[in-house]
Image (cartoon, rainbow, N blue to C red; front, side, top):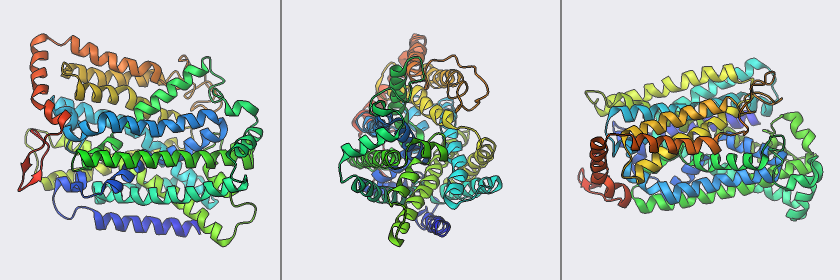
Length: 536
């Protein structure tokens, strides 16, 4: 039944991409969908890009095994979107056009800024793409009951090709439609499963938590902070570092921020973000109930036996909610849950491929000496989708047998340490210079890459990427507590060390567009369609 459902979902979503994709050589339609999505639809698409398969499965695993710490980290997802909504959403929409490179180059025109933005986009999203692609084979093998390594590799290749097709054919609107379908299925099926779990405990959350604490093997510690990082030298600081990384980093990843450019005006971006925050909050509540329910009903040992990291806890909790014997209706509901996760895999990677391809085509190849026509740039972005997706598929097949948690963490750390300081400084600091921007992007990225090699996610523990070696030297699991301040410091140093005549010139460039970025002033162009200020 699951195989039929997955095949049907893939076929229908590909048809939706073809039907909703751009039907003419219009760059704005491909990159932004011409702002035709409603605030509700755009909000669901934003939440869909934000809630990836790694988030659903990984967050469920952390909650199931760590209890309190996992719920706190999950709440960081909703808090992260709130940070994006209140601080960055409107200025990003005003400053940008198609990509993050547009937003950064609004005040600092030049190809070097765009190339640096593209390089950082690729560096931040590639690890997350690898995790999703590599996990696709394991997830399908688990759901369909196959154990062959060849089957898993074939799933990675086939699903990767499908994801590339989504991005190349559907563009922004096509991938948005898939994200909307995915979110409706994910939240709808998850809400039903959460209700069934609560019914098993007479609708008493306290009884659910007490049962989970007993079955967790940790007792009351399951309901107290510090369990996830108990093996580290500074567990509370480790929790703070992880929370800081998730809250700041997830909000600034390019496949999430690119959805800001699809809103027609500031009012729409605010309403879209309100729906996105509400959807993310509902997801946190659902996944918390289902994951804790998995621990309460099955116990820690059963969860870790299926997957050492607990990544299948969400599925195990959904299956346990129906009891030992499931009716036909309950079997159909469980198939809906697994299909929603399948769509989550497809939609998440498609959005990341689209973000990388857009940046590569628009920020690098479209800004050469001679700018290509719209048809040429559209052809370039579709080729770029293949150029991004094909190596990602190959790398995913090579790393699929390792623990990929360091890659997920690296993506969030890069978002928090390189992209967040660059966006905050570029949008709000008048004195910020091109040298400061380059120092932030390159220095913040380098700091993350160096510090990550010393964490216990890479070596020094049985669940590390290299479990047989120990070259840990960094005391925290994530780099955020050190790399985020370093990212801001690099930007400040690059700015204050800029020669005064260049700094004054670049400050005047910012003041020329400041009202467009902060106030959202618009002008009419192209027969009445709204533009976004000079340099759009």
